[in-house]
Length: 298
Image (cartoon, rainbow, N blue to C red; front, side, top):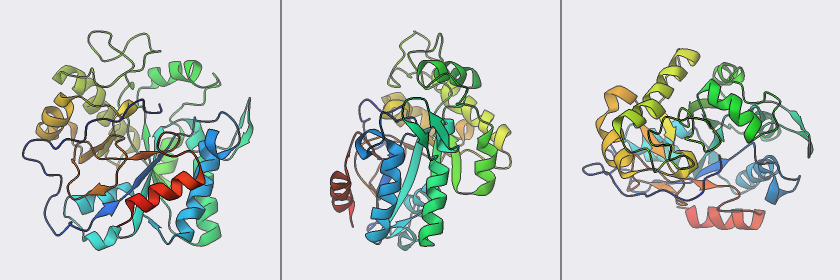
């Protein structure tokens, strides 16, 4: 779901984010789109229109598009910062069919899926392109959300996830088990405090939302292994950022997590709450997108 507020970007104690190597010059904007954001057919109210336009703007500006996992590898000092120089990474949230399929929206007409938009750009420019889709993992939750948040046509299935992973243009990662969404009859949150991820404050809740989701994705997408996480609503709790994620790695097996603080990923960024810019929240026009890129430029 589109984030409501940006989460804290404070560093976890003893964790500067990096893992060695000279990452001082690293400065990579991560751009986030929601394929379910279709309220019209203009840039400001349709993330499909915005994505297609933004890809061309990136190309004209000399930006490279790299996988999000590559940004994390640079942050952790596993690859040279030069491999993400003048680069952006793309991420999609929620994992609905609009990420993959061309669909006829009942109110706004035919929509080119995000995957098709990426392929069109690649074929047009010859430039490599890749995105990471952070998906809501629970099949039962997605079935309800398809009715409460989409159009009730069964457009939130996971059939396309293995196809995407095999093709390699979109990687599948976790956006939690059930998003702790307030339209669900029950979530992993113990006290019924839904509609926010700040209320995930215990090991049991974190395990149900994060580790269980990773296990499910690993089984569904083998041999791919889930390694990245995006906080629902862009929100996190101190427990998740400072305790669960840094100290329970053997259980959840993640390498990094992302919020929605509008800033580029730098060597100083918090590994367990990395920043992302969100279309529709941090920019709503080509002119505002140009400002985002200018502010994020090395």
